[in-house]
Length: 552
Image (cartoon, rainbow, N blue to C red):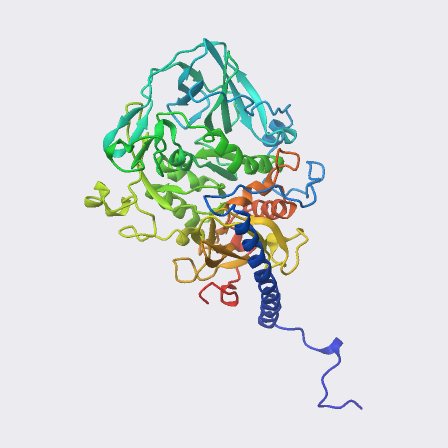
């Protein structure tokens, strides 16, 4: 006879309840996280010390170094099976012959050739005005659409006939706000062809004397109901633009117009300086564009200016993609993106320091919304009439709207440089990436980082899937990769690092920082978010209380 007090044999034990399974899963994850963070802290201290001794941490942000991780073998023939949303149009477009000729091979000296458009985006059939300055007798315009294109990054759609060159006036200064702009006469008009697919474009100005520069343009479709919308961060590009002498950060080589050492307003009526415009697009944005189109996803494009002017269009999509550096937002942009999330639209923040500084727009002689205002203090005149639009950081008074309310975490410090540390290896975001507890993702964190700290405005149901110890200006912290689900069911994913996008570069790109773990995680999130409100299939499981440095 069996002992009535003995435990039943395994085959006859009742199955654990759902609550028991969840409890055990959380216990197992907590053990994994504690192991991962403890080991990572030792490595982080050594990494930061070595970096600071090498002298790279003294001034500004260091560029990400090429990864030594095994090079990718990802091609369109080895990608995982694609679930909807698949786009035949994206597939057909990217099967057309690509080229790397969109790259600049001879920038020449400052002002040899440069230009700007009267708009940041246009629809097919629109005519846009180019304002150009060059020392060359003539130049041509080559229109390149950015995408996968056999891994080459671009396709040439159109080349203009020779355009007569002209040397235009030097930069003019609006003294009150330290604003430099180019008050030039129009050079030529470009019609966006009906055969130009929506997308991110670089117009390459090629002087007859050989010099080259980019002028960016986004071709949009306001009627689009594509699954994904990728937002080109033109407001952030302009904030850092020093053409003429001043940006929203400093005035290099200029006396400052008698009004301080930075602009309080910058103008879109000017070219981008060396390293701006298409350089920002190619570094912080192109890898995402390429990978989305490599997957043949149903994707459309708009700019941050479009979000400000037509925020209601965001609700026409299932997922909004914010790219590698998306710092400067208007109140309307925040309102519109928040409303889309609350309607079930998923959000991907693939950088750090997003939604940090509030801006507003004023007209110029060229058109509406061409001047971008950012006082960074309560001296902004609009405070007297509309305090909610005061151009301070969103988290500051009188706005008092921490970006963590939208992103889930928020900006902490710059510069940093460290490995990413996985703490939730069994989370769906890492599925198929081959990571275990404490796995290192080489030099994932940098140069700016975000962190989830409870009480800073973020939701309580944040799930942290990577928690990476860092030190910034002598202060310890953590860079987080986070995910949370809104009451609408929308999922919000945030990488907490600027370097994430660089890890998506094709492995054969010059000085590539490619990492297959990051690529796989990005694919997982894109595909899950393309199916609709991600919280239905992937509700977030908050774990911040189990991790150090979160306020738990």
